Amino acid sequence: MSYKLFIPGPVAVSEKTLRAMAQPMIGHRSSDFVALYQSLQPGLQELFATRDPVYLSTSSAWGVMEGALRNVVRRKVLVCMNGAFSDKWHDVALRCGKAATALRFDWGRPVEPEAVRRKLATGGYDALTLIHNETSCGCMSDLAAIMAVVREFPEVVSIVDTVSSFSALPIPKDELGIDIILTGSQKALALPPGLSIFSVSKRALARAADTPDRGYYFDLLEFQRNHENGMTPSTPVIPLIYALQSKLDDIRTEGLAPRYERHARLNRTVRAWALARGFQLFPEERHGSVTLNCFANNLGYDLAALNKTLKTKHALVIDGGYGKLKGKTFRISNMGDETDTTIADLIASLDSALAETPRLAS
Ligand SMILES: Cc1ncc(COP(=O)(O)O)c(C=O)c1O
Image (tube, rainbow, N blue to C red; front, side, top):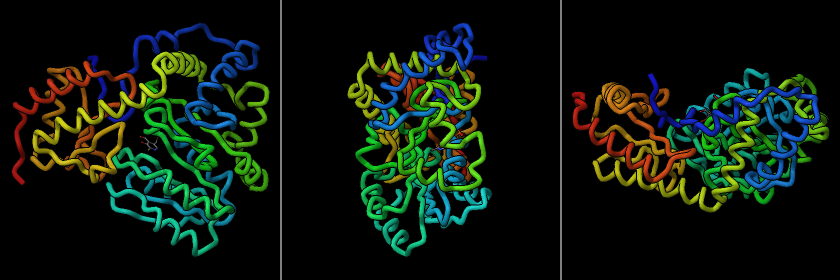
């Protein structure tokens, strides 16, 4: 059965992207690959607003999230936590044997710059992790304000996850002084999963050079060395790289400003619809994500029944809440290739499905 995904990743992949993936294979050490790899750099550097190289990792985002820790944490990392993915990042740091301090905020609350300053000021930190857009609860932190604080601590290398915000709003890496920025393919880029895209400052590369036990697969120095020859350290997922090339063409055609505006507009459309139906946004409105909306299930709908109706009668799926928020919230993505028409269709389907969805006794 085929149905359209409105979950916050993976999201729907266009026919054009799927066709791009079906091109004949090339050798990853061939001049054709070098040309393909190098053709992506200008578009990716523009999206990250960086002059640093952009690397391609054949892994999901977690590969680079873990690898970044192994490359730059020598003393202690401050892990900013306000949802499922940032909570897990702390666990991953501990599993890598790193000293990691948790800076916890309630799910749905943004990371507070002042709290970051207070923690870093206690000393001993040489890295910080931050998730710009906590997909699990639809909460977007103020990246510029947090990075302004981080820049006060020159020994702290910043690792920023823009997995579910990249390419949906401006994220100026160099201007903000972000050392390692990473994203995944299956979110706003609307590609299939399996590719992580990231960019690293010279400062972070220098730190990596002094850090033991970096391993091989995610060694930043290997990425840089291969990048200089237009290649990746190991055999990459070439079909996804073709898909990325096709997507960067789409982005160029649409233009960055219209792309950002489209994401913001469609996000507002979904939010306005739900608020008008009496749902509440789970995070405070001003901290709501622009790529998805996480709504409280304050009206007590049977979300499993809702999704069953959506899938069987309307051929689409939304998300019924992540982790401890399952059943208590629902999430609707507006990232990727969505348009006013597809979002209007989604809303019509939601209205129709809600009308036949039972409410659970509280
Ligand atoms: C903000 C954020 N970070 C990290 C991840 C992990 O990504 P992956 O499962 O592709 O490694 C996700 C996945 O949804 C995410 O939303």
